[in-house]
Image (cartoon, rainbow, N blue to C red; front, side, top):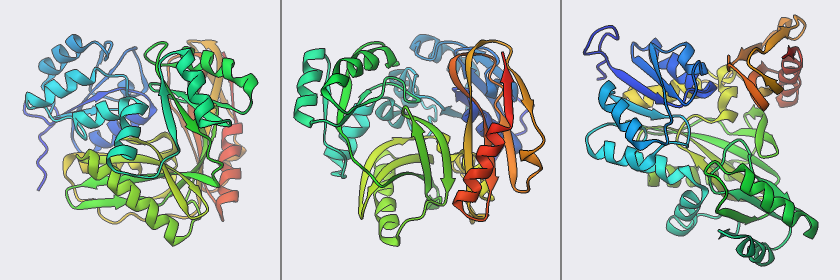
Length: 393
């Protein structure tokens, strides 16, 4: 049985979101629907999740001292990270002090950088991954590229949304790839991973829910990335039962190894009958936004149910579905959206505008969603919703 106290009372069940982007916003909404009192946190004011939470805090979550001060002030029942850029050593200490970090503090630390999770999956769990090497300096990087071979993929060990990531397809790309990796790292210039390029047939996100009743898998999600960042996703990704079973085996091995309750976005490459582990996020995944239209319980509801210990129930898939990210490019703190009627008049379509307060460069600001007769129809309808949104700065 799950017990949740009235949110307006001192005994109310409190959930503290560390990160308040579009994914955190949906988690906050689902938690509030179940009577949970939510405090949204981020480094900037008026972040999407802050706009719907009971209260919010603005601070640098990489500042361990400030993070501890605010946690001890709020005394949350659940600390739920939405992003990687958090003082993970402080989370470990807070967990030892009795605070409940979702799925656990080690998961946040392990997945904060690509080195931790790659070594865990390949060297401890013996899962199939692309060959890789790490490099701290330019000379080490050049040696790693020579050893791994061209083509290869270069990523900072700490980055998000494809920042700093590139593919080396020829010797002329080596210098550019190193420079870009150093500018795109979340922690500043530093360590990178060099991976052998796998000419995969497709890649999937396998949303995996660990909950008190066991492990539940969401139908596989196919996706398209540009510059390492999600642009479109669709569900279900067509695949053989053998490949699906192997994908589920890998996802369960990784998530069982990490432990804790909640949803995990396990990213996998598929080439023929081979499945390669790529990465895992111990939280809802951006490609999983398609679940807001594709099934009876979105990834956000599943995450909250797992956190609170509420039974999963049965997940019903509504049919072929897709999402298409809406990008805004430029610099402004007052983005104006002009939404035409055409695409949203079509049955089985939906739109989400995230409400991010500003853009500086290129930023994902919304998503088009659609159900279709088949995957291609759903993708076309989702793109039409995306293209129906024009913006001015």
